[in-house]
Length: 348
Image (cartoon, rainbow, N blue to C red; front, side, top):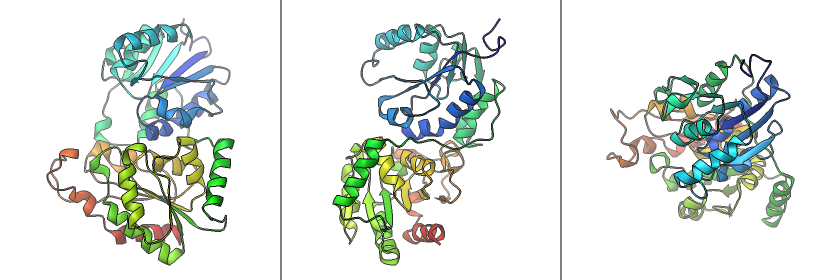
C-alpha cells in the first residue's frame, strides 16, 4: 500500500537546483504541498546561492543544500549525498527541474515515489510527465503545478514568497540612511545584468532611462547586480548624471530583497531579481530579447498585476542565443522611450 493511499505522504522533498528566479517561481508549490499535507515533514533541495530564497519559508521544515560546484561536484560526491538523503526516509520526491543528477540521487536515496519531467534519466522516475517546456506554452509556475496535478493537488494560489530577514531589513535601513535617502524619497532600482549576453539590454540605455525618470519623478537610483556583472553595473552607474547608490556585487540575496522592497519601481533584464520584486509587490519593467518560445515572456515573465514586459519581434527565423550574428537586434529594438513609457504607465 502506498503512502498516499494510507492518507498522505509523511516525508516530502522538493528539488529545484537551477537559478534563484526558478526557485522563487517554485515557492507556490511549497505552500500547496503544506496545505495538502499539513502534518508532513517537507524539505527542499537547492543550490547554495538560492538558500536565501527558501531558508525562512514558513511552510518548509528543512532546506538541504546541494553544492554541485563544491562538495557534490564529483559523481562520488553526489553518491554520498544520495546516501545521506536516504537516511531521511522521504517517501515522495518532486523534481521540479529535471537533471541527470537529481533523478539519479532520488533513485539512489530509495525514495519510493519520484515525480518529475521525463527528461535526463527520466526513466528513473516513478511518474514522469512529457517534457515540452521548450514550447513555452504556459508560464513556468504552471509547469510546476502540472507535477502537483499528478498527485491530485489543485490550487488557485499563485503568490510567490520571498522572506525578509530582520538583519537584512536593519542593514537596508542603515545603508539608505547613510546614503542620505529619506523614507519619503522615491526609489528606482536598476538591474542591468543577466545570465547570458543575449538577455542584456545596452548599458547606456539603462543609464539614459534612469536620467529621464530622475528628471521627471525625482527618483533616487540604486544599481544592483550579481558579482559577475559588476563592470557592467559600474558602466551604468557612471552614465547616470545624478547621485547613484551602486550596490553591484555587494549584497546577499536576502539583503537584495530588503533593498528592492523599499523601491517604487524596478527596471531589469530577464533575471531572478525580477521575481524577487514581484514577490515583494514592487512593480517591474522587464526587458526580454531572444525570440525563443521556451525563453519567452509567456514562460518567464513577471507575474505582478502592474508589471510591464517589453519584447519585440525582429524577424529572426532562428535564435542563435549568445552566438548571435545580428548584434542582438532584438534587444536593440527596445528603445529608451519604450522603457520610460512603461515606467510612466506604472507610476500613473
